[in-house]
Structure formats: C-alpha cells, structure tokens
Image (cartoon, rainbow, N blue to C red):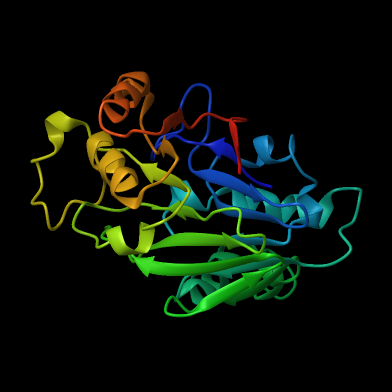
Length: 262
C-alpha cells in the first residue's frame, strides 16, 4: 500500500492552521518527503521519525517549498537523539550551489560548506532521468512557474498506482502526458477563477481549481488532492468547483489528511 500524508497545503503565506507545501509519501518500506515548506516539520514529526527519512525531494527553490529544511537541519544536528546517518536530500538543478550559499549565510563557525552537508547527503536529480529512492521510482518534467520547477511522478515498486505531484505550475505546462494513468493527482489550485486572466495564459505560474480538476480528469485518476491555496480564497469552495469537473474523489489538502491506495 502507498500513502500520501499532507504536511501543509497553504500557498506562499502560511495559514492560521497549516503551513505551506509539504507531503509525506510512504510505502511499506520507504518514507519520502516532497517539499518541506514553512510550518511542515512540526506535522512531519507526528507521522514519522524525521531522522530515518529515505529522502527529501524539492520541486523547486521557492521559500514556501523549502524553508523548513533549515529547521530540520538544526533538528538533525542538535536533537538529543542522534541520527544514524545523513538524510538524503535531492535538489533540482542549481540546488547545491543555492544551499552552499545559504549555508554560508547561517554558518557562524566551522566550515560553512558543511552547514547543510554535515546532516544531509545532498545531490541534484537529473530532470530527464529517473531517481530511485527505496521502492519508489521518481521521474520529473518541467512546469511553467516563475523559477525553474519540476512536477514529480512517483511509481511504487508494487505497481499500486502512481502519484503525480504538479508542484507549482501554470496551465501552459504540458503535463497531460506526464500525468496520464496516474492513480492520484496532487495538484495546486492557487489562482482564483476571477484572477485567471490577470496574466497571459503562457506566463501564468499557477492553476485554478478547474484546471487542476481537468488535469486529473484527463489523466484518468481516481483521486485528486487540491493544494497550495490561500485560506482567504475559500478552499472549500474550490473543492466544490473541482467536484463539478472531476469524476473521482476530491480531497482538500490539510495537515494530517492521508490518502492511501490501492
């Protein structure tokens, strides 16, 4: 069985009851975190030992998708229970240089290059290739966003059904083929319908709830989880919009919400 547990589903601003993007993907043998935005480490600790993660994978380097990696770094370095090894951290292209620079900002003594490398085993994934983490195989495709960003598809070894995570993306991204056949679609729905045309279609960096639902419907998914929404935009209303389009189950991303399959 494969399960996806929401650690946070707010957009760029944390909500009153949840942090930003972060998701725990689990199989019987593997625990992987997809993004770890502000406010998500607290939720992660409720579900798994943060010291024993098989990997953390970032879709892109915006703060709302990675800030709690800094908090996790301190937890791994100073918690009284010491990890048995470094936690694998997979970054998008350019991520190693980014975290080396960030380490030099926070480091006050010792080797600044070891600020993150001392607790994380850091690598960059090749978006055109496959990444194997435990019994998960992950593939990537570029999205349309304001910085380079990659959607992630996770295939469990038991063929239970794939998860497609859109990360942050606008509607001009060619995700239909990448999503085809996924059992679960975890899709952002940041843009209110009233603001859909405020930017050109080709440049917009986020989806509407209707666009997220259409993607899941075209993919033939069984479950759609909509995420990355400001609470000020009434996420429950956006769920209802998605339910009017998508024939399967629609789930609102909230901390602790878990979906398992098959």
